[in-house]
Structure formats: structure tokens, C-alpha cells
Length: 81
Image (cartoon, rainbow, N blue to C red; front, side):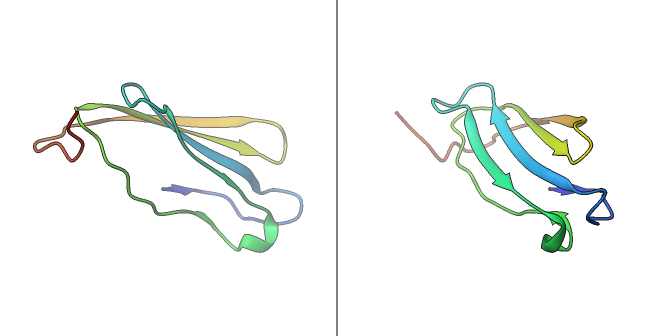
């Protein structure tokens, strides 16, 4: 996941959060960043039992928020109950 940002003292990404709609714990990830991070890019893995939407929200230093949502299709579930 990547947010286009110059990552300067004046303009940078403060936080990135990832949410899912069907997982038992919908708050998947929250990363706190600052201008010294160099770039607003993170990589992670998660297990899902079913196809669902995943949403990401980025908070910028000016107080604005950017968001994106993607539909993920699970062909073979990694989590079985």
C-alpha cells in the first residue's frame, strides 16, 4: 500500500489504517508515520476466510483524509472455523 506524498516536514502522511468488513477483528493495521519515514509505503499479509472489501484510510499532516476500497476475492480460504 502506498500513498503519494512528498513526505516533507510540511506535507506528510501521519497515519495509515486498514479495515475489513467481514473479519472478526475489522481493524487490521494502523501505522504511524512521519516525514523521516522517507515514503508512505507499507507491506503486510493477512488471512481471510471469505471474499470481502478492504479499505485503507490515510491521515495527512494538513488534517485531511484519503481513502480507497478494493474488493478482494478469496478462492481458497486460509482461515477455517
